[in-house]
Amino acid sequence: MTALYLYGITRPGRVPRRLADDGIALLEVDDRAAIVSAVEASPIEATRRNLLAHADVVESLHERAVVLPARFGTVLADQSVAVELVSLPAVGLLLERHADTSELTVKGSYTEEVVRELAPGVVGYRDAYRLAPTLDNGLALGEAVAEALAARRARDADRILDELRPLALEVRVGDADGEYAAVNLALLVERVRLQEVSDAIEVLAAELSPPLRFKVVGPLPPYSFVDLECGVTA
Image 1: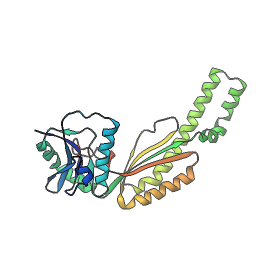
Image 2: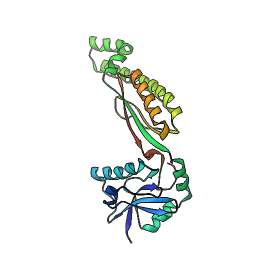
Image 3: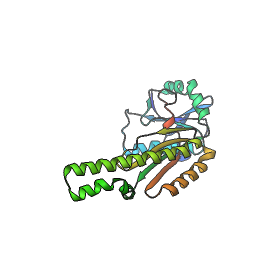
Image 4: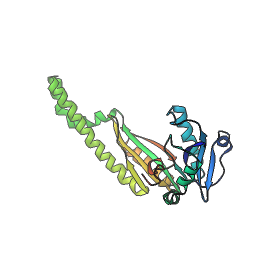
């Protein structure tokens, strides 16, 4: 029995020649199809090359059709397991749900200019530290800056969500990692509204920058909104 690497699930169709030449194929089951390739070993090493190859297959097919992306490294024991997964009723519902959706990831982070904007709120702590640069005064200044930045982050995040949430079908709010991180969002958007969302982000960028900068990636398959390991939404 040949194990199969699962990239995702789509509708029956044609695989682009460059992907077919790399062994990518569609295992069709009625009106559904698993995107697979034969694999000899499991687990699959999470190298940069392998991660990019997985994303290339999923995102290339997503350009022209619905794709429910599988988690990187998903290996099915054989064809019968793939058929069983593709045939799940929940998979049919997901294909219908995401027939015309894409994911946009939106991350916002502050430049160091934000510290100057926060300065009026911490001027007392800053002056105290200048007069007496003790450990206690330094810690108090650091805490005051952190609190002011947290308040600014909360205010900006609320504003961004207020503008973008009505344009999306779903929103996932992730952790804003990093000292100057502001927001980390995954938006599930109808493809016909992608430009509308992009325009809204440009308006926000114009109003909040500097010091807030946005990085938008997409349109992508709905990575954050599908879990094919159990065949239901994550």
